Amino acid sequence: MEESTQPKKLTTAAGRPIFDNQNSVSAGARGPLLLQDYFLHEKLAHFNRERIPERVVHAKGSGAYGKFTVTHDITHLTRAKLFSKVGNECKLFARFSTVGGEKGSADTERDPRGFALKFYTEDGNWDLVGNNTPVFFVKDPVKFPDFIHTQKREARSNRKSPTMMWDFWSLNPESLHQVTILMSDRGTPYGYRHMHGYGSHTFSLINNQNERVWVKFHFRTEQGIKNFSNDEAIRMKGEDADFAQHDLIDAIDNGNFPRWKMFIQVMTDEQAKNFRWNPFDLTKVWPQGEFPLHEVGVMELNEVPVNYHAHVEQAAFSPAHVVDGIGYSPDKMLQGRILSYPDAHRYRLGVNYEHLPVNACPYGFSNYQRDGRMALGDNGGAGPNYFPNSFDGPVEDKTVGEPAQELDGLFADRYDRNAGPGNDDHYTQAGNLFRLLDPQAQRNLINNVVGAMSGIDGPKKDLITQRQLCHWFRADVRLGMAIAKGLGVDAEIPMEHAPAAAAATV
Image (cartoon, rainbow, N blue to C red; front, side, top):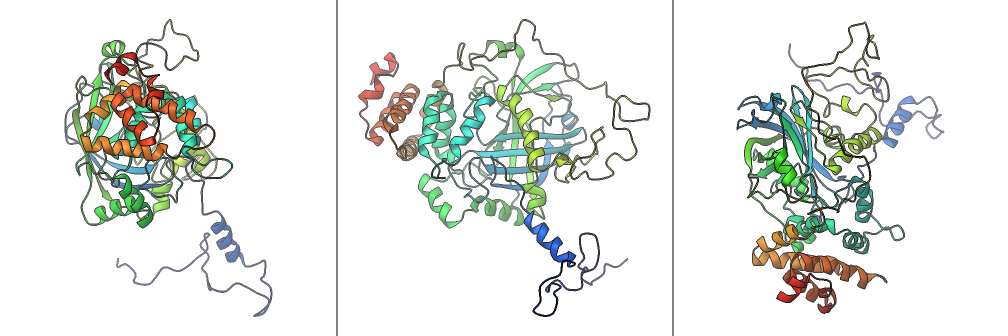
């Protein structure tokens, strides 16, 4: 059957053909409009509701579809069907974003970048929701709202406030590792194609023998790392606030499909018990010298969504979405996100957000959840909405499930996140990172910190500045001295708080 060359006929949402889409129904040529002009009301009412609440975090984003291909065998670690053999492929959707800015902000701001992936597997959708950094600012979800508030706007002036940011960071030294990354050139990546991605949290893999190992996911760009300098990022903010969006879309449209290789780090339970840091602490990395990267597969982005709102804006990711063979860990931030991310989506998109095409499992789903806003499909049809039942409703799959985790002897309480060996060491890894940088990158980091901390003002300026300088000194004396000098601060003041051994080396 030949496709018609005639244009589609304009209709109301209910399908009624529209005769005139340019003139409202009025009582005479100059008279008032009539209430019966339903199409006018439909058009205006829909227009008033076109915007959904923007994400509180990760509001400014870009997305694309692609595929993931398994290249290396890890069946000894996981029974997830996606990894059952080398060569397996699945469709995926990726969304990249800035964290703190609003939807209309510039995507070259100094900010971490969200790195969220949705794998459409035959066992269900698997979401890996991380950042372009392997760590984060806080290690307990109860602190997350406070941190995000400091990245938003100050209550009185409605302006971004360096004072709020540095006040929080100086009072929470667990943030120092992530702040060190943020203030380096990695804080201003050249678009989304030239940055690595991380699951960041510790997850687990479970094999056919019901054996569990702990794992971290890494995605390394095949385009090569490329960053803006601070001055370049500021200039691009004015020249093109959507630079990263253009860079991603143009690359795919031109057939230059970006690719990332997936790697994993693996830690046994015994290694986790003896690791010098808490392996489930989101402010810490696992050193690759001790826990090397193992290649798993490659992802490629090759399709720009036909409609941004339908696919990118309505995409909803959650680390709660895992599949059989992939599990969680005691990572406190992960535990908090398992709850908070789906809750955010239900508020922003509605309780049936997983019915939307970008979020729906293409292999189907069956459960007893019914009703609510935007219940697409047949809403379960005539089937029962309770379990157990005698009417052939969905039943449990006893072939899946995870081994129990040993919790005997532990008590539910609010434990000091920084208590215990290694948990209060916020400085070693940040200092190691600084010392690994080449001289130019070190200078860039120092200049970026000095520039950012110069924005601290108000009556608490000296207190906040000196408190933060103490953290830099504890990470690396040379780094602290350089930042203090750049800020015009007497280095002897913060050095009073530096470790004795470190002070003796100056």
